Length: 379
Image 1 (tube, rainbow, N blue to C red):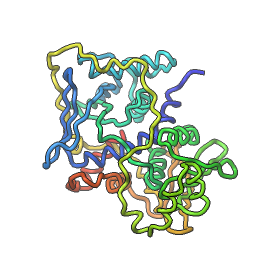
Image 2 (cartoon, rainbow, N blue to C red):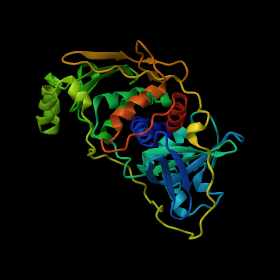
Image 3 (tube, one colour):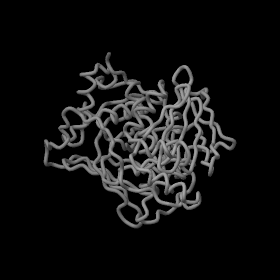
């Protein structure tokens, strides 16, 4: 059975959502500049200096004027191989797996197409951060980005639940259970089976119990912190050590929430492209660099408000969050008593994901920040 675009989207959506939140926290309030020469680089700078310098890979571009998506491997601008090599890898995968959307050079644009093609490319290449750069005249260039800083910290229960709930609002996810299983495999999150085909996710700082309906959609998510009782025993058995659970139980909740996340990642299973070709250079002459507009000042595309996940209680208290379909996409999100905009979840993620040694970043005005994170999530 051949792979479909939807299969790739399902497998990528949750990991991508967590990565984009992490990426956004690193580059908040920063200006950017891209160079598409034989040594391509994407640089984000603030008043304090360079915030992040990474390697961009041109996936494709969307034109609002023509209402089309054009794959980077078509390369009408004759960019060097290091710029478009990864796009060629996506095309090769599409040809091998008969994924029509990955091998058709130009596609009619819809609201979700660019994001869905980017999610598919992430699953194919194992490059998990993307940046949509406004290039003027209604054109947006979609880039995958490599940088050492784009390594996720150890999984935490609140960060993961937030990624799950927010991911379901980004695009259509047809198999929540399959998407979750792909995500926990990539993140190395231990799990335990629950009655009625439920699934428990286990973390050093807590646990999350998920249940599913007959169509494999997430119907309820119950989060508990700190880690104790049966989940603590299951975590110790799964990891081969009781130390993390014991330390979490003995640590007051206030202190636990204040501790920074470790920067040592768990092993992540990534699918590599069959033939990268991205390191080769076909030209030593610099190619004209586009002059994209500043993303934080661009009017963002409208985003359906995303409620923040419920905060974990202490002791035996657990937050239960039923999930219901949204009328706009048929996807599902967790309702809470006081819904917040999508950028509120991103704001909270900035505090959780920021590295302790990173310089303090100037807070953005709410409207400006919403534009940045709306762009990062592709909506």
